[in-house]
Length: 580
Image 1: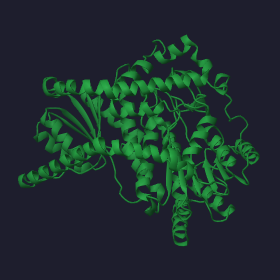
Image 2: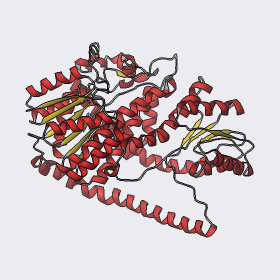
Image 3: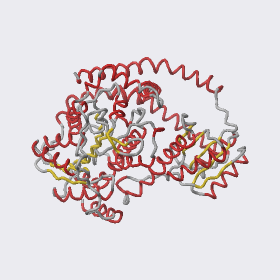
Image 4: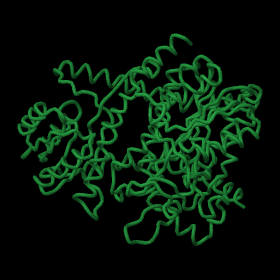
């Protein structure tokens, strides 16, 4: 019955996607053009007297936005680390029309300083209308040229945490019971150039040329490349790829997050193919159970490595011990470790606890990749990344989880472009499948990790939950075939298309299924699930009281056998690049 329910949802999602492409988009385009040309100009917001807090305001985009708001008559609160530069921007903003400018020296990657910036703005002005989250830092170098991987955590702290902390303190501290004020996020810290009129004309012409070029390229892709490539891809998928599937017998595979869920199932799939395994997770006893089962299913050798891959040192040690044990060889890395949360952003009461999610979901993949990459290059190996459909489909109640998966997805897509054919990369983007996540385990609004079936039911709602064994089979088929992406259950493929082509439709659906207010009825999705009894179609492991592998477990504490790492890590990578 569960498979029938899954098939019905798959057909339904394909029908919805077809309606979006064939009906909604053709009808909505002229309506949107009319609104853009005639209605929106009449409904522009009056900014005079509004209060605007801008982070990263000492230069670049933040500085220019301060001047734009000032010219509209808004009062400003400017935040950045460079106090003298801020004072100069404040003086220029006053000259351009800002009635009042507050200078706040703060590092918004620190939660305490973000809270103080918001509180001082409210204390000074008595209100806040706009937040412009602009602070950011940049890097540009190939991943395999990095010699100090831990230094790059600063990028995430500045570019991501500053927005989260600022928003959460607006919600918790100053606007209880209200929806967010206008929040604008800039995604690039590119500097604003002061140009002469002649230079500005040349720049405008150059930008216009590139804009036309990009529109022509997009039209060629849609009208020429896609129609021509589809029959070729179908032919390759049907006749060529089945003959070229990778033989995994004797290959060495390191799997992170292997103690349960998708990681555990992938271990069994690799074992059935005759691969040697190195299993990594924090829970030693659970790993030993998975290792024993993998040996029974055909793996010739299984190495158990208790480690926390959100720590760079422990990731390095896991890779080193795998290579040492299996004879200087590694063929596949499966980056699977992850953690979940399901709560509305404005319900969060401990914002700093959610940095753990980025540590595990993003850095817990990047660190093992960094240390394994020289070995994967040497063996012409493969990276397998357990991402999520949440990386492209931004459903409600999972803001932190969605953000980490989007970062993970973009990272490995960038890495694929950098590495070319040296190392294959297969990205798994599963939807809801049986795992500890769909049993309800995750970071709660207060910051503690616990099982919350109520939150799980509200999140899953009307969606079916696939069996992890079926995902494992589909994933293994795609991994051996060298597919770039593997999405299962397949109902999430058209959902990803809808998210790309018609994000407004997805936004409406999320509000309809997940929208609720404190003290109100449960979300519509959960009410439908309860009224129809859909929960009985969950896999059996989810229907009974969730058995999470936490009781009496021996966790890796990250102390024994771990050195301090930056110098050791750089030396290790240098040695690998010279020797391989």
